[in-house]
Image 1 (cartoon, one colour):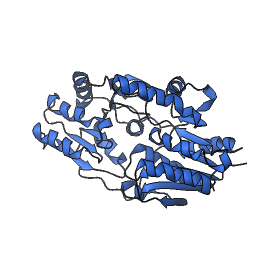
Image 2 (cartoon, rainbow, N blue to C red; image 1 turned 30 degrees about the vertical axis):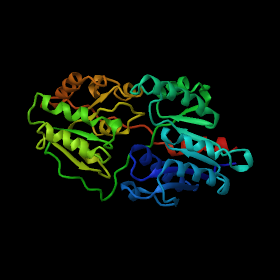
Image 3 (cartoon, rainbow, N blue to C red; image 1 turned 120 degrees about the vertical axis):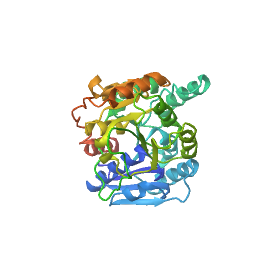
Image 4 (cartoon, rainbow, N blue to C red; image 1 turned 90 degrees about the vertical axis):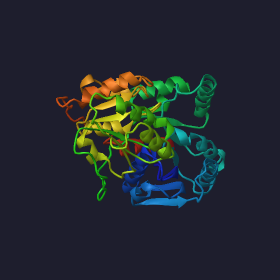
Length: 355
């Protein structure tokens, strides 16, 4: 028996890397002849233009998480999918309700781990609560998918599951998007940030580093949109950086910007396996990143690829950026990203669970 019908979900198309990777996978599954149903709370958002052909889109009209969870439950009972795919850690709660479908047998659930599981950015009480929550999830999730070997080891530890319940499948690599337009960029030698303007990303750290750089003309461009735009614009104005920091908004395909940037910076509190680091290295652009995930050392495996700095260490961040901003900095050779066979690997996993 094959998993002929795959059900997946998203709150909206305003999301970032999790939803974008899900769309690439779903498009591949549909192209392979599988029925793919995507439940989405709200179809508004820039990723709506990236929905691939062949996907059955069900718009719920409400992006609220509770509403989405109830829709998953109804879909599990009414649509009778062969497998439910949770595209990121944020969506695993909704999976519990899906188990009520199919006459009590439950829909097999596969959940991709998109963020670090031990949230060291949280306070003590919240961190303990998060650890307890992680230990509950194996009750309703049949198989977890980590994107690297280190992430898989981390998942087995914090989830308390046997090795065979955690598969390792990389995200499919990003592909160029035809017709995507870039905003005006500095001519060369600038710092590039790519990601949502949300608290997790801590772009305030990167902006605060700009006036401390050795090169007083170095510029920063952050491509992305989110709830912190106003706060970040206020920070830029307060530091007098209006001529050196640009926040042009969401860009459908940032890949052309990597080649002209001196360095790609990621200053997050926590991450899973940041695709933006792989995209930058594929373009031969060095990276500066916080130690926001156990997967970071797997990606930035040698100093020639970039620098890893402690979260909250502003001096280390400035020093790392300065290293890659000097005119004679040697750019790394392009690193081919993994994940070319991700679509087929997921389908093999789905089929095994369906049987």
